[in-house]
Length: 250
Image 1 (cartoon, rainbow, N blue to C red):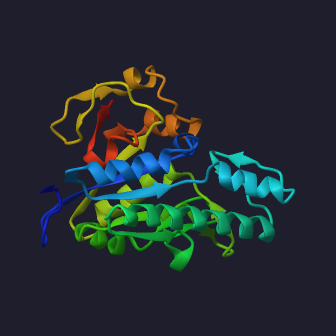
Image 2 (cartoon, rainbow, N blue to C red):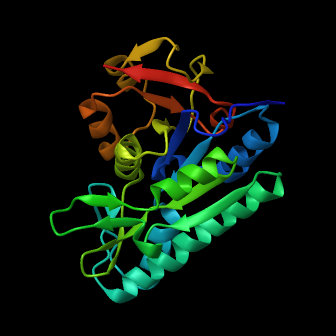
C-alpha cells in the first residue's frame, strides 16, 4: 500500500476537508465516506472539518427553538440551544470516528469548543488553537474529525461554518513551525467530472467554470470560492480518501 505520509520534519501537505451541510443531506454520506477510506490505497493526510447539518436543526426544532442561520452557521441565542447543539454535534463526531475506526482507520474527534480550539471574538474573528496537535496527529497517520462548534468571548458555544474554519486552519498552519501546509478541499454531493490526484501539479480549472458546474455550493462556500486568492480542491465522498478531485484556481 502506498502511503502519502512523511516522516520527521519533511513538509506535509494536509488536506483540510470541508464537510458542509449540503453533503450531509445524503443519508449514506458517512457510509460512503468510510468505504472510500476502506478502499483507498493512497492514504492522504487529512482533517475532516464537519459543520452543522439537519440533525442539529431537527434537534433544535424538536425543543421548540427557531432554526436560524447567519452566514451559514446556526444562531444559538440561549444556553439551552447551545446545550442541544453541542450534544448533537458531539454525537455526530463520535459516530463518524467510530465508523472510521470500524474500517481500520486511526481516528480521533475534537469538538472545537474544547480547550478553546476554535474561538470567535467580539469582532467576529475566529482564532484556532491546537493546530499543531492536529498536525502532529496527521503526520502520524491519524485522521482527525474536527466538529465546528467554538466559543465566543463570553465562553458561549457558537456554530461555525466549516469553510470558514478550513480557511482559518490553513492560515494558522502557514505561520506555525510544524512544517505542514494546508490544502482546502470542498466536498460536494456529487462529482461527475473526471477526477485526478489532488496535487500542485494537477491541471487547474478556473473557478468561474467550476461555479457553473452546478456542484451544490451553499452561499457561504460560494463566497469563499469567489473571494479566495489561493487554489483549492473540490472532491466528493467516494473520491476524497483516495486524494482524487479537481484543482480550482482563479
